Every structure is written in structure tokens, then in C-alpha cells.
Length: 472
Image (cartoon, rainbow, N blue to C red; front, side, top):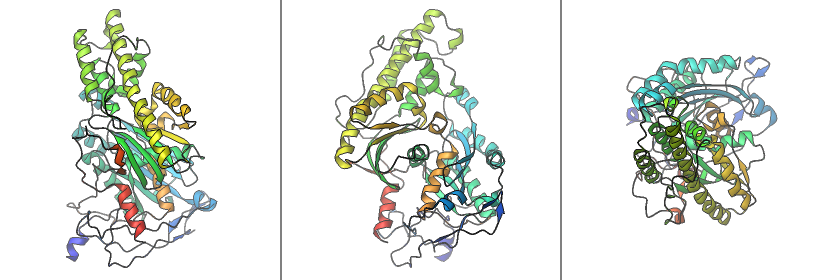
């Protein structure tokens, strides 16, 4: 039994589950000035909790071995330096951020050529691309920050949701760095990071707030009550908006090297958004869930009816052909965003009933870089006297800064894990969470249309955090 427990991964403390009978030892923090580089002391936790693992992740006896004791001081924030690693999909990213929000470095290695070649993300190819560059990306982040691993306070890494093959690359690298230099390690939920990076940019952004997280793989409306506590108001029942943008770009023969979203947005500026009458998805469903599969089908049929050949690049298209493609791009974008607007309006109304004090709508994720999306959603929030908060485009797409910052937020409240071994065995089972809900569903938000993608490999982040707090 002991050997089987030892074989389990040293998962990150916010996810570690402790049996009810176990002795709980809270975290304490102590700034240690053992080493000083560049006149900045290295901040490290003084001790770590005992870790225990239940027989099942769904065990009712499970809770986290974490402390909710806030740690906040100016010296703590300046001294805290976290490396963030992100490999959940098709970008290899690393960044180093101070506890006070200062971004010391940010490095992203894009897989644009692979996206163009395969017309989307090919998981095995993406994994190989991550493996080839991860060491250099992390080293570049350290070099640009003029730091070494010994000057770091902790390492934060995405463990889900995302593609398992890709997540593994980042987690392996994070554990190697943390283990080799005796650093705490912090797990990060990819979608929580998209939401929280707005707090790095907008210092006035306090809980609670409403967040719309939109990307190639996700459409999520969540009410953020507190760190680690989220209510899911709506999600996609099939395809996300970013996936719809990517497929539309591919079918229109656009340049995918900068991903489909920017390509469609740019072409749409030349078109007539009223020229093609696409139907707005899910008009009959009065909830906050999304669906883009039907709109994708409408776009494909419109392209076929106009005899547009995707094999002919836009740069080689005739004037008439280019005009047809632009009209489809503009019409698609208008309806895709109208769907967002409708769902956001309802979500704002629901959120104000639950948390009347909310003042902000955060819009983040890759699609939030789209200026048309921002402009339209700004009109929505103005109706309710809310403020729209959008991170800059380089922090909307997947990046290491959002991972490092989310790690900092969790480190402050004691949610981290002790250093892993310097070398994991070849058969080590990493804690990867490719399908990992952020929060529990709002009762009114459950859609009768939701029949797909309901399987949950892991309990939601919010349910795990709340269970741990209740038992402390």
C-alpha cells in the first residue's frame, strides 16, 4: 500500500487530497534571505505540508492540504518571483513575474507553421514541437529576466484543461526545474489563468466579477466569487467560437500562420456583414450556453454555393472571388459575435442576481484579441453600467504570464506543493487534467440541448477548493 502511494505523482497542493483521518499541517511563509542576486532576496516557504492521497479523487473524505491564510506585504510581493510554464495546446510559453505584478520576461514559441500545414492542431505533432523547444523557451525566459533558477521562488505550470500530450511536456519541464533547484511547484487551471490575468492588468479588479473566456477550445461564462470559487453560468455544447473562426479561415483559403481568428477579422473589414443571412445559434434556448457547430455548417454551405476554392489562396483570388470571401467572413463574424452578446446579456442579469456587487466583465482568451468582439461586448456592459476589462492581446492568447500570475495568487494563500524529486522515474504517472471544469454549473444554466461533452474526468476546481476550506 505504501509503495503504491509513493508511486502517485506529487501533485500540486491545491489539488492534493488529504484523508479525513490525516493530521493537517498548514503552510507558513517565511522570507529567507539565504541567497541574494541582483539585490533581491529569494523568497521561499519555510516548511511544507504532509501529503496524503485518498483511494479515489471522488472520495467524500478528500480535501486539500492547504492553508487559506493570506500573505500580503510589499516586501513579500517584490521578493516573490515565479516562473510560469504553459503547453496546454499549440503554443510553448514561459514567463517570469514578480509578486507585485512586474513582468520580468515573456517568451512564446508559436506553432504557426504546423497550424498552416494541418489546418488546425494535430496533438502528436504539437507534442513533438513542444518537446523540441521547451528547454530553450524556459532558458530564454530566465535570460531575459537576467535570473537563474536559484533566484526563483516557485514554478507554476498548467495541468489542465488541454491536450494530454501537450500538457505532459510542460509538467515534465516544471518538475525538472522545481526538483533540481528545490522549488515549490504550483498547479494552474488554464481557464482560471485566463480570468485572473486581468487582475494583473487592472489593479482595481476585485472579486466578485463576471468572466467570458473565449478561445479555440473553450466558451465559458463564469461568475468569479473568489480565488478558486467559480460558478459556471454557461459553456459550449459543441464547438467553441475560436474553432469556428479557425474552420472558417481554412475553408476561405486564408493564411493560417497567425491562426484563423485574426485572418477572418482582417478580411471581414472588406466585406458586407449583412450580405449572407446566417441564423443566430440557439435562439430558442433561454440560457447562457453556446453552440457553433450549426453556424460552421451554414458557413460551409455558403462557401460551397459560391464555388469558393480553398486551395486557391486569398492572395491569388480574383476581385469578385475575394469580395465573396470577405462577405462570408463579415457575415460569419457578425452572427458569431451576436451569439456572444445574447449569452453575455443573460449572464450579466443572472450574475447581478447572485452577486449584486459585481462591477466588471472580464473578457479573455485568444478570441478576446478580436477588436470587433471587444467593441460589441463593450456596448453590452454599458447597458448595465459595468466596466469591460480585456487584457492586452499578447495576454489574451495562451502565455506564460497568466500562468505565473495565477501561481502567485495561489502561492499567497498557501496553495502549492513541495519540491518534487530531481528526477521522475520513466513510468511516473503525471497529474494531467485534460477535462477539468472550472466551476459547478448554475442550476438555471443547465441546457436541455447539452447532450455532448458532459463526462468529467476530474471534479471541478471550485468543488475541490470549497471542500478543503470547509474541512479546515
